[in-house]
Amino acid sequence: MRLLVLLAAAAVCVSGQQRYDYKPPCSYLPPPPTEPVCTKQCPSNSRCEIQQVCVPLENCSTKKCKVNEYCKDEPQGPVCYPKETCANKRIPCRVGLEICRDTASGPICEPLQREKETCANKKVPCRSNERCEDRSTGPVCVPIGTKQKETCANKRVPCRTGTICEDRSSGPVCVPVPETCATKRTPCRTGYKCEDRSSGPTCVRIPETCANKRRPCRANEKCEDRPTGPVCVPDRKTCADIKCSAGEICNDLPDGPDCVPDVPSCEGFFCRRGTNCYIRNGSPTCLPNTCEVRECRRGLSCIDTPSGALCRRGTPSRSCEGKYCPDGSKCDESGPEGAHCVKI
Image (cartoon, rainbow, N blue to C red; front, side, top):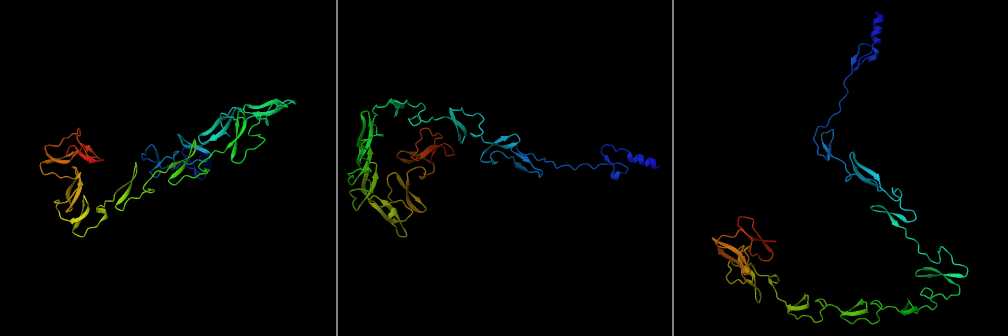
C-alpha cells in the first residue's frame, strides 16, 4: 500500500494541472486574469483607453523635442531626431573650396572666400632687386628705384581741413567736402526747408496747410485743407451747434439752424436737396430720398431713380438688370419683394 502512494506521488500532472504541497491529487490551474479590453470605436486621430474613453493620438504638433532635435511623424508615433548641423552633416563640403554654415533650414555649403592677396601676404616674394607694390589688380613686383605711384593712401601732403582726398588718373587731389543740409552755411528762410539733392542742399517751399497758413481766415470763416492748399470757407453752424428748448426741434435752414415747433407734421419743415421730410417717432426729420425710407401708398411700389425715390403703379421687377441703386447700395434679387436696393 505504501508503494502505491509513493508511485501516485511520483506521477506527473498533465498540462493545465499542478500538485499542491507535492501531494496528490493533481488540480487544475485557475485561469489567468484577463486584461480589460477597450471596445469603444474611436476616430483615426485618437486611441481607446481602458476606461473606454478616446484620447487624441500624439503627433509632432503636440510633441516637444529638444532645441537640437526635430520631430517626424512615424507609424508608431512622433519621434525626435537630431537636427543636421555642420558637425554631423552627412554630405561634407568640398575641402578647400567650400565652407559649411548652419542656417535655420539646415547646414549649407558656401564658396570659400579667399583672402585678398596683398604685399603683406604675397605667396611668391619679390626678388632681392625688386620691391612689392599694392595695386588695384593685386600685388606687383617692381624694380627698386622705380618711383612709387602716389595715392590718397600714401599722399605725402595731407589735405587741409574742410577738404577730402580723391584718387584720380593724374594722382590724388584734395577737393572740398560736399556740402549737405547738415553743414549748410546759409540757412533757408522762413517758410522753406532744406533738401539734400544731387546738385547739393536746396531750399524748397514748405507746403502750406491750415496749420501754417500765412494769412488767417476771417472771424466768420474756417480753414479747410484741400489738395490745392488751405481754403477759407464760411463757418456755417449746424443743428449740432445749438440746443433747442423742450417742445422744439432744430431745422437746418438755408441761412442756418433754427428751432421750430416739434409737431408730427412736415408742413413748413425744410429739407435740403436729395432728402425728404418723414415723420419718425412723432417728429419731422430729413432722410435721403431713397426707397429705403420712403413709404408708398397701398397699390404703389417704390422705385429708386437718379432723381430720387418715386412711387409707381405696377408689379416690381424680379431682375436686377437695368435697375438703378443709389450710392452705397446694390441690387438684391432675393426675397418676396423682388429686385430691391440694399446697403453695401
